[in-house]
Length: 244
Ligand code: 6PG
Image (cartoon, rainbow, N blue to C red; front, side, top):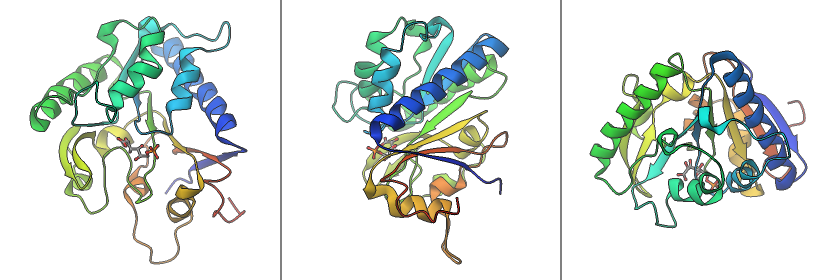
């Protein structure tokens, strides 16, 4: 296993600023190399501060959004105006504030039946991948306290999916649609953004597993091209042994 890259930042604000720099770096590199960039964004609360910063970058730092495609790692099967919608959060914090063409937003239609939304999103993702050399440039991931990431929850059979890029899953928290490990691990870069003391135990379990501890879904994220980059704030990193 390639050792993941881990960096710890003093507080959530410093974490969001560093994550913004990292995302802007990935976009600039992809646009320079291929003239197009495709990013799968994570949902939940942690990335909100990052998206707010990307919506208002420092002077001269704004990317050419016309060549950036925003996809989603997963979605809760709710209407986009539902407060739980990952797309709705990204729309309100980022998309509504940047000159991103509507055709560059690849959302999972949470208002549709899960299997239909999964099929439609799979076709959309395949279309994006056909333009980006078969890989997403970046997958941004969060981490649940149970070790889930995207909507890949412990003990669910979607963890064994090796072919389909997208699956509908019936999670204990409700119906979801998620990217699968083949697409996530096929990305050029993977960035975990984790904040808060509530995640410190699961972060240690994933980055420094004790002998015999079974792997968690986030442990299965192993990009083929580069190790995942774990960006943590001090609270989320508090249980890590200092040998990292
Ligand atoms: C979701 C996310 C999920 C999230 C983690 C962490 O739809 O909820 O895709 O994987 O990243 O649950 O969520 P928080 O950032 O809210 O702790």
